[in-house]
Image (cartoon, rainbow, N blue to C red; front, side, top):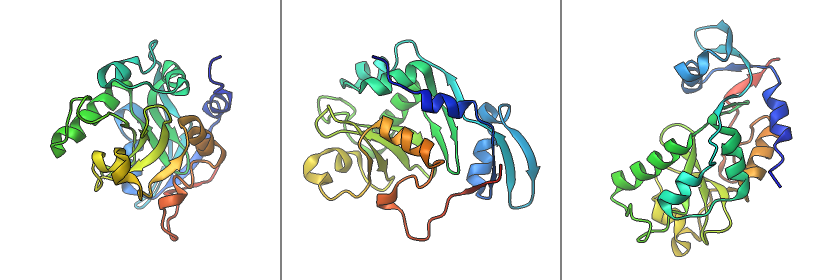
Length: 214
């Protein structure tokens, strides 16, 4: 049975207004692949008001099969079903979530391993970490598994190597665990208007980068 994404489909039909004050968020919302789908209501020196909904791409008929084939992994049905419907895009909440396309996930995984001199052959280091959402400053949200079966959504800090995130003996004390599955993560984002994005690793004074004003 296909994954029920009706909760997300409803949010696609909503029109919401947010005031963003962070320059990175304002710049990302003005990027060519997004700006034509959102309305800029007001722009000040230190803020911009955007109105619209999530900006998503048309899906991949084969889901994430290309990722599985490239890295020798098996991803959950819900991830396949999501990418069959929407090949990434930008989720607009109080925090924005630029979700990578299938091809971008592949390229990002290879880029990180290559730059850091880590194995790029799946047989040498299991590809059980796949960055799928760009959180700026080379930090990502990632699908992560230590057994190849149970894929949670975790914070992939730029200062932590893939080996330290994947290998059980190194990751035992890793604090970036967020949600037990992609579907749980997406539902939580939808229910909380995208905040908090990761309670286990947030600082007490962290605040959402935008305020919902409509």
